[in-house]
Length: 521
Image (cartoon, rainbow, N blue to C red; front, side):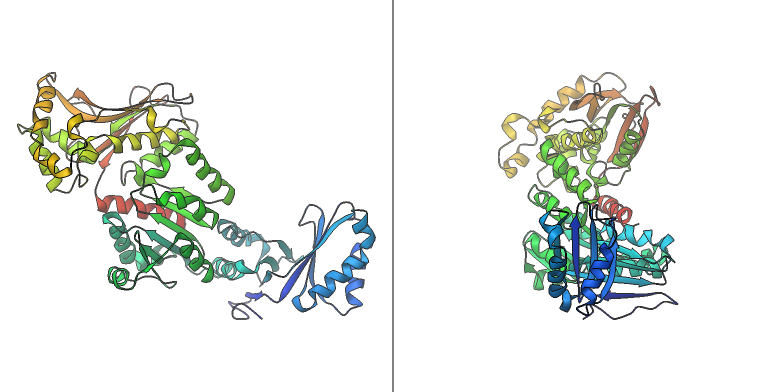
């Protein structure tokens, strides 16, 4: 029985997928290279009218692989064990193993010189051929695979050799402001991206904290209504199982959640062939041993994890720092205004004759703060961003190493949110006192600063309110922009400066979208 249609034709090329076969492995020590081994195998099976589809030597370090029909597999394995009983006893043959959970993908009319593209697509999807057999002409290739991988393999090979659109299957976790904006951006650009890039983006799952909707052929613009009325309770295993049942290839999981719960699923998703994109900063700021576990899983399973929006929303900051570091550039300091919210507040407060509480209220009304603005004023978000940059430089700092100036009085930090809003005026005296002490021509900026000897195990991480000259790089910042200064040995005293919108759902969603596209090419 075949998994799908028998043949997929395009000129002289065709693909057969066969799952009624079994693999017999002869694993041994020194029997390879001995005269007559192949003869004994074929003679033993021919005496029982058992046909060998193909035989491959050397795919394992010490072994021979034989593919036969599944109906003859038990008899063939038993016959070979009998034929090589002496070799089994003296351990020249360690084992004669039988595996019925395999399939063969046979590609005809494919030039071997370009088949590496198909193999790369398989490897990217954690599909590793058990055996590979090609003819001397290089025009026919057969792959022995796990049966569960055969249909995905067919799709991937078909796309590569016939030049069809590359299908990217996306599961989106979390549909808050950023998540819903991202979903709408993807849905509105599916056709144009496929036309321009030959990439078909297919959102097959959307979840919130309790419910999920699935569609292997792609979720449409009515997803909000579907999730509300037809969403089903789910576990992370349901997402993986759905992808496996429908043989979905090129999997990407997008984390738009904000808490620490979902990040615990990252390694499980990586092990099940998902690349990761995240707007959530938590995974990169948890204890370093968890940070390392994610990286080891990514390396082991050949997957990628992109999180450009963790720092600077849509600005190309993390990628720039990572590339500089990878190239051997000695980065000596990174300093900047990391928070679009606090950028807006202090850009205005430094030059306007307004009480601090009024400007904070304006920021809340404009939707620039968290629902509870103390989350912004505490500096915790800036601290997380600074730590992420430190770890991009292979520093082993922890959150406890970040020295953070909390801008909220201790007695206001734990009271109910409504009480905090009623007592905003209390902050006015605190900040007016700071403002009165400013030097002439200086302004206030809330900065993150990574310094020290960054070639050592740890750097110095500080988050604090500072006074800077009005006409300095940081001092000229306006609106809710973020700005980052990257100091290196090559640049000397003049930093590389990256500036732009550092907050906002649309900007952040577009940055996440960009990471998805980077994984798709």
